[in-house]
Length: 338
Ligand code: KG4
Ligand code: ZN
Image (cartoon, helix red, strand yellow):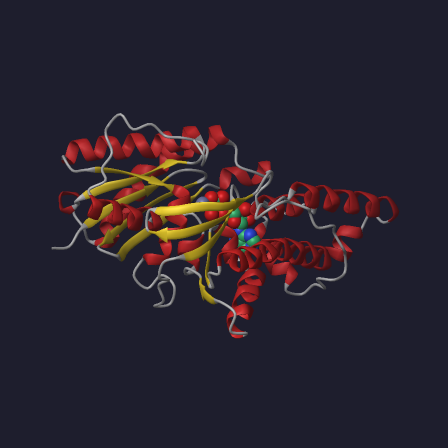
């Protein structure tokens, strides 16, 4: 007997709904919120209002696209954290109400676990699925962490950022250069035509397997500020080199810790997940290790890398198999270690 689940993601600024049948995604729709662009970052209050407007049409469209009637659903999975509280509450309230009305189980999903489990969606990573244990570098706008994944629900956090996330470093650099939010994809594009060695930025000294990006952000800001004093067109003239140098430094920091984690654990199966795993430079760097025969690499398809409900639905599927259901009293949480 197959299992059909509706997944709902609303932890930040994307309202997403997906329908999964066993491990196969039938629909995965995302409503982005343009309202934040003019502010250079996500405004929490505006995000939750936009989720309220988007959630019903997104779910309705996902059901239609999947050709699934609501009465055919076996369960509803939703993100209960970490994320922005107001945004999480919209998805959680809808999921609870819908599950109650349909009289089907409700499943809570941890957003960061879901980024990792996206690898198990049918055909998520070009037909390849990692076996346990593997290491997963999860890099997004809110998180940068290395997870030692022993089982679908047995994940040990072995390294994390002590300040900013890698995605934030991309977004802040873009903002300093006057580029719109989110800046990561724009930096990625510009970097392809720039010189990664044009500008040098100091690397952080962090113990263990942790990361730090706030110092890098500050040195980028100071470099641009100082150069603008002599040449007001500095950014326009050096946009591609600035993007390439910043991206190369971020990738270097990520790769160093990933190498260290692989050496320390003896694990050579490496996955990357989260929005920043869409970065072409980071992808090239990890695939280069595979070519050299050092690592076996797993990266989900682009649509399963950035925030999406398909990853919530696959996590819901594995929780359904375990009978791990939530109660109506379930409350969202904002931070990973809560
Ligand atoms: O996982 P995600 O969609 O949302 C969070 O949970 O944060 O990640 C969004 C982050 C943003 O910081 C965005 O700039 C970054 O991922 N991002 C990229 C690229 N695509 C998205 N960063 C660098 N290069 C990209 N191609
Ligand atoms: Zn995310």
